[in-house]
Image (cartoon, rainbow, N blue to C red):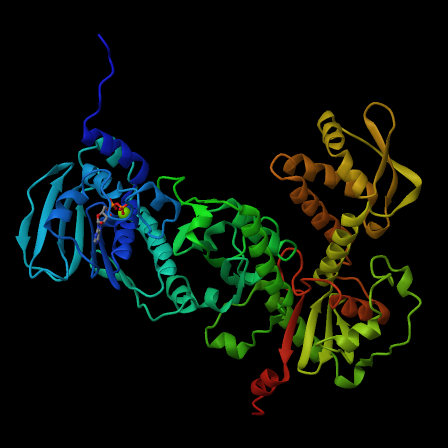
Length: 596
Ligand code: ADP
Ligand code: MG
């Protein structure tokens, strides 16, 4: 006798629920998406005990009549698609006709609804797949769906629910995605009777971000748009200062649907490449509009992933849009004066307070008469200084100074670490290591892309011993090492000697550099692609080859540093995302000294 049986419908729904309904937050997502699809302009979400006890969603949308209410909770019932043609261009959030059936199979549901054409409404109750008949009731136009005791008949799944705090944080995350994607709806969320969020449809994206995240994050966003090749992009890009250790501040929306997409994430990463530490994630809110026919949403049960028919186009358009904005923006950090801090704006960064201290010291010790005036005479010491020497294709310092937004007329180095330079609006403080590190990084990157770095034979080859693992790492990365302009010869079974070393890295100690390089490659080679790996190497090289804090600089070197700031991209931040320059305006100073 055969062992195969056809599962009854409720079993089928419960199995489907395993995919779609992971936890209370999934119920919130599905119910609110249905409310949005119903054309609602106002949606309220109320949850109790992290959604474990109750989730209630009320909308003022089109509502359902008695007949629809009776079948909405059956499986494969939908009003959103009718024929296979409809699958080719889906404009609603839902279309699978599965969510309500899945939810109703694992919870107690009560749904109340009324269409605008009816005088009275109807309600229905379903307990884990068993439904009672529809009964009339009096209610406003729209729909309320209440979900109680999720998974109460499924102890194995109920056990996997986390604390109310954890579950509400998942609900909040879903709510944020919905709130950002549907801009013109009044949306509220309450937990145990207390307001969590109350947003109105009149608020723009920036206002919503302020409410949902913080003023600090909203203030750090650059806005940009593009509309080309059938792709409308609106983006809010976080300045490097608010980059996070995870992608928790990256939100991508496609035609009002929150999605995750590896091409778009990659484009964001590429756009910021070099402006933040590669291990950090920039904040980015990206809203894309494109024809529904140009992608498929029917690839994932929760529709969080889509398949673009032309993923390369999406990638390149987004990369171009973001990069243009980031490159054309002055990302220089404005000083936060004590007066602003007292108003409780933002806590000072450690580095800022160090600079403020350094400044106070400086003004105590130096009188204005002691300042040196910049003299544009060429400095012969310059060309011998590695990494800052005059280069082909680089504007002369004079040229650069003329073009500069901040032409310094006077400057001075303090504590052998910072440079203070006057400009039209006030003055700037430059962190010499951070800025030079950025300049080195950009120069290395540019050159290594064209050809292997120019190298120089060492007078005495430096030899050192390797472990088996280190030897393997060297072998596996021989191409990369060649590109860097490092020449190695093996010297006996476990020994190598460095014969030639890149000119640009002359400030680094070759054996030391190679040892660190091998360590880094051993650690990172498995997880990064070749671009990512090269980028890591360049970061390391730039840091080692850059002038350090505590080094005395000549006037010529300082001039060169200031001039080079204008010739490299992303010069406002070092490759780790820290500021290279902090600006102080005369206006602020006058305010501080109570002159205005
Ligand atoms: P889908 O959203 O994929 O169509 P669902 O199971 O989520 O499937 O919902 C089934 C149907 O119930 C929807 O197609 C819609 O017609 C109706 N419906 C669900 N929620 C609402 C609501 N809040 N207002 C009006 N109609 C709704
Ligand atoms: Mg739905």
